Length: 119
Image 1: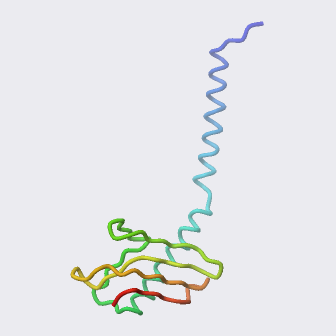
Image 2: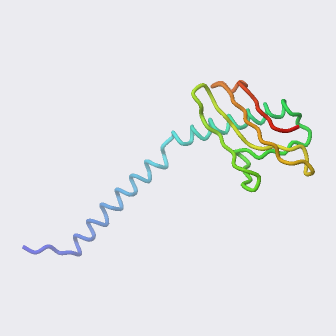
Image 3: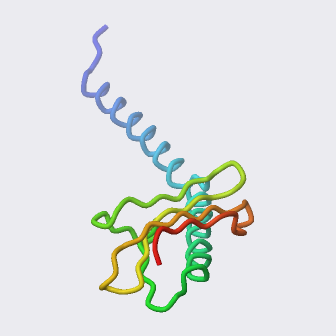
């Protein structure tokens, strides 16, 4: 009994294609990454509002996880055990230097602490 390699290749290609398609579908429809991204965006938007209230919002320029600028510096948003921590940079105008900030919030996005190194 001989095995026709053309049939074997076709069966292998079909099975491999179906498996890859199934994994791709599972990856695309997974709601966990979207929910995580929405929670991170909400934390960054809350940190923006808290920072603006802390340092004054007249002409405030921000570099944060939603508006990164690698030339200024690295920025982070990460979950902590009680809530969120968001870091970034701010300045009040083109003539000022960038100042770092760290906003720590509780799970319901209430301020826990705000640390700024600048005006």
